Image 1 (tube, rainbow, N blue to C red):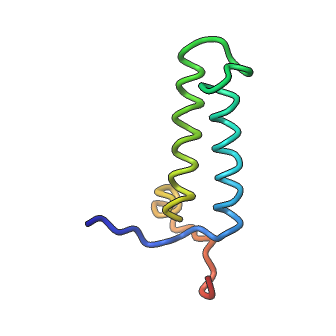
Image 2: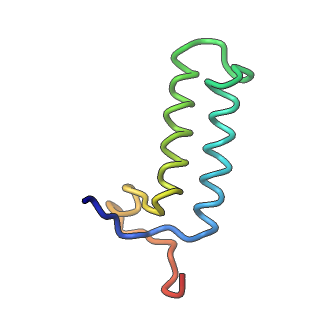
Length: 74
């Protein structure tokens, strides 16, 4: 089983969930923001990635750069 070491705070996760949901609604779900398929797909991928990283509390880019928003008490 794959396990990820948490490196995101609750606030960071909330922001990513909100941004990811917004990208999904504006992109592939309603086509409000864009009309072409490529842009809609790109927004869908970015939105899904943001939501999944919030769900697992893990960001690959944080791991690579050594950045962590998680406090010891969380």
